[in-house]
View 1 (spheres, rainbow, N blue to C red):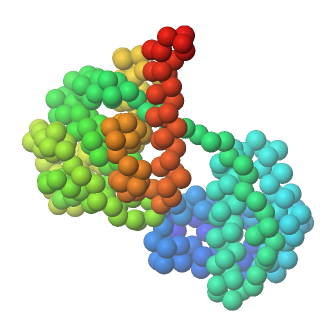
View 2 (cartoon, rainbow, N blue to C red; view 1 turned 90 degrees about the vertical axis):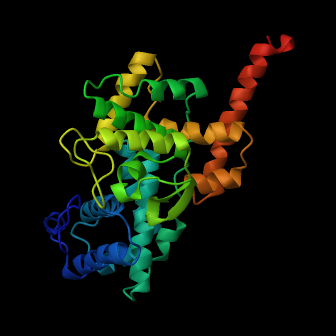
View 3 (cartoon, rainbow, N blue to C red; view 1 turned 135 degrees about the vertical axis):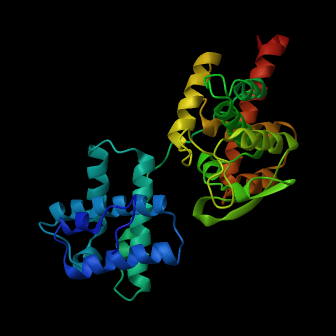
Length: 321
């Protein structure tokens, strides 16, 4: 397996002294994820971390590095022992759910490539996850974030960059990674923008004139003048802006505005969806705009809007006081 940036090197797997057939299966699986599934480097890294941790557990659980035959002979009890082990380590249920998904993916790959089956993995249920509710900003707070986006930047072009970035996040409902992955040639110039999201799935999002204006204003002031395949959003040294910098800027802004810790760059995306829903947008359209695969993911925003309506009701209705 050729090592890639951000991916656990093959030497890490070699440290387990895996038998040749298991190591070959892992290598082929990773190659399949990259070439056939077109998984991003970040996704592939997460998958490999999960599988590596499982193989390390199996090494201890079975008294030696697992050969392919050992992996195929594991029983439901073995998999439950692995889940109990993760629970003992206080691993988050969401993390365990992802790890279980990784194992199912790996075992399906073994089956498809004729290496063998293990039906036991299909009998293991996902841990019950707590139902998280998105935490958007109010329309007033979202606009206040945008108004103060450049408050902590002495350099005018960096202030305009922050304004362009947060306007894009709120105006188009993008994930922070989706915005920062844009290149100069992909910048919005018309009423719509093609975004490549999770799983390399593309979607079309409408673009407000104010978004285009903010980005054009930033580019006119940027000393690096990014063009073509160069990153659209740049850091102070001319490299692609990273999410940690955007998150740091948001922390400063929320402290200035006395906003809760849930006021993150991703909260701008939550705000986009919630405010559309409150304005009469239908769930299917919002699902498409956000790039959600499942409608149930988008339906979480109905809970947010219901809570807002109930808060207004309790504060305004005489019999609710």
